[in-house]
Image 1 (cartoon, rainbow, N blue to C red):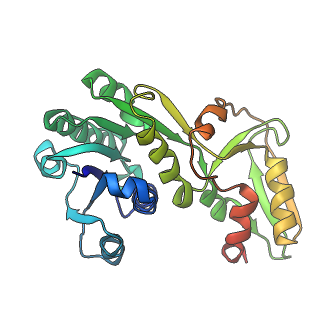
Image 2: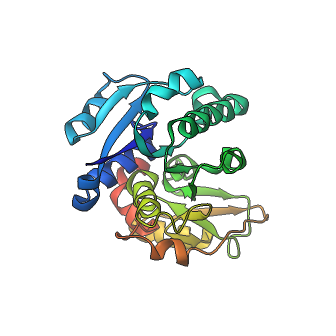
Length: 257
């Protein structure tokens, strides 16, 4: 009998990536049925998930009572709260706690979550893995600005050669890391999986962007500090290669034109 994987925020970038990664894998899709939770089950993005084979249900994370039905019978839960939905950190944390409480009450076997409510989830005793996404490559759609003369500008509040920024194509690759967390359960219960393709310095970002776009690039430097954990172990868990920065730029050139 298939197990239920409940995915909150299923129509968002992270949740949608998880749904696609599971349903796109023949072995995983035979083991798991997706219960995709979204506030509006009738919107186009929700209908697209349904067409892929997910069961889409309407729900929100505001209270234990509103969350509980989506977790009944679930084996595994993926949670990614969205700060920008409310722009209120307290609301985001409250939502995460509501899902954690309901998951514990429902006897969920495995919980995948972001770090915001990590300690609360750890204290609850739910077997959990924490997938920590790197810097979204899509953030550079706004960060890299095209000037009137046709050149591009990237303000970099870090040392442009020494700073290392972990890059993730959130839409294409979040699901790959979450799938790995599920595949390697329970080995990674209580551990972090670092979701990023590689660390890049601003200088590397500049060089590869320029090569792909064939455009001039200006980098303004304001030194600071950026540090991070090693990625080798997390990357070794993946069945599929995540998107490099160069590949991301190549497939999204139109965003900067």
